[in-house]
Amino acid sequence: MGYGDYNRLNNFRNPFGNRPWLDQNGAAAAAPGNTGIKGIVAGGITGGIEICITYPTEYVKTQLQLDEKGGQKKYTGIADCAKKTIKANGILGLYRGLSVLIYGSIPKSAVRFGAFEKFKTFLADEKGNLSPGTRLLAGLGAGVSEAIFAVTPMETVKVKFINDQRSANPKYKGFFHGVRMIIKEEGIGGTYKGLTATIMKQGSNQAIRFFVMETCKDMYKGGDPNVHIPKYIIGVMGAFAGAASVFGNTPIDVVKTRMQGLEAKKYKNTLDCAVKIWKNEGPFAFYKGTVPRLSRVCLDVAITFMIYDSFMEVFNKVWP
Image (cartoon, rainbow, N blue to C red; front, side, top):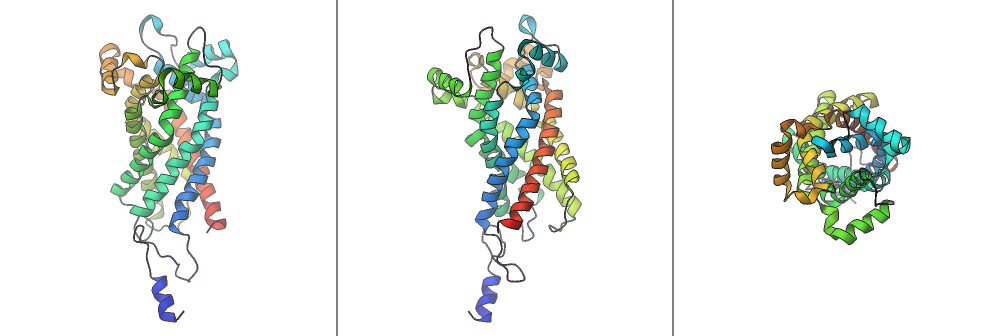
């Protein structure tokens, strides 16, 4: 190959991501497809680790969101919910339904980060930076992808498991037994209850989180993608991004939880559920579980981005 041919190859750019196939020194750059694959693998590992750390707060949040006003109300707050759960079922009661999220969190996180990396490849400029608009778009795409391919069936089964524990005689004996029962009674569509609300929740969730995260990273780096960000700074950025997403979409999360509970049949659709909550319980009902969700999500997102960032650093070194 002549120098002219080599130079032309070195200057050839990916039409989707506008990235060079070779770096300035002529070394082989990572293939565009590898970014998405690395994101899937790193995201899957991250999801499994993260959920084992933060699940008890997710359990309490879901219980409080399922709790309605009146004579059926079981808990007075976070501490009361945790205390009554431990008294009735032991400390492991706070991990009821964990198996569902372990099975679901790995593909959920894999789809989320894999999709984001892929969207980022398509939308980023030559330096790998995203504009404010493309940050929102990439995050939205990641959230919608995970909602459809992983989150909705996993969340439906999880909520039904936790809701089932509230009854006098729980009928689900375990993950696979519960899934079989749900499909037997409601068909495969039974695992896709609340799809619209979940797409709205996950789409807005990830749009907010990735927008805030990428904006914070860009501010820290000053537009230079080669600047290294310490892991504790990544953690602080993640916690801030998580808090922003909680205040931004908890109402959608409450509606989603109700639509996926065992009493979801009393709602005609997502809009009907929202209207009935407003009418029967008032506007503050849309922020039930905000405090436990805030503590869980801030910890969750901080840990997730720190772990994910660490794995991606390793993968980028050993996986060209």
